[in-house]
Amino acid sequence: MNLIQIFKALSDPNRLFIIQSLIEDEPGAERHCTSFGLQLTRATRSHHFKILREAGLISQVDRGNCSLATLRREEIDKEFPGLLQLISTNWNPL
Amino acid sequence: MNLIQIFKALSDPNRLFIIQSLIEDEPGAERHCTSFGLQLTRATRSHHFKILREAGLISQVDRGNCSLATLRREEIDKEFPGLLQLISTNWNPL
DNA sequence: TTGAAGGTTCGATAATTATCGAACGTTAAT
DNA sequence: ATTAACGTTCGATAATTATCGAACCTTCAA
Image (tube, rainbow over all chains, first blue to last red; front, top):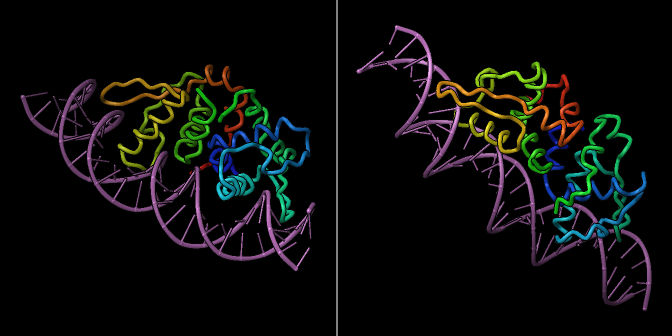
């Protein structure tokens, strides 16, 4: 996890929206990747989740049928305290 | 000032380095734009400072001869508390 | 077992961004 | 006044990134 990669990941409105949504859920919550209501094709959505994964912000479990995303809250808080608080806002980036 | 624009501004190693350097200075300090030791042409350097300016992270005064940059500490802390603390690290992004 | 729905990868394309050199203006020192 | 140093803008180019459709795989339900 490095800050440049994280800032890059969060500098896209769709991805910031995903993370903000996950922050609002209860800790450890698993979300279907389709549940965010993004106006994107499956290919593009998959691309964005991959970037969030590679930045270390989320983890994902594959069920073939669907994919479940979880915010890596503890790891993020440990490595970059204040980050999640910073981006947990009511403002919608989309 | 919006978070997307700020994350975009900070997701470049040169620009993150500039902000980190300014954070380490005493509050209100003015820095010559050449004083950061960036390995870039003047045109490119000017480009990066413009992006930091437009994101609201720095202010600049033009002296024709040279340009002085200042971190907009109070405004940033007011709008996005925790941001500067988050990126004030010893790690060098370059 | 067949089909529907979702996720991923691949290849292509469009849009954005980083970088540079050249030209120009400003300031300061010679 | 002339020169040198710096910043900015412009135009061009290379690199990165966002987006999509198609093909393929997995799971689940009919």
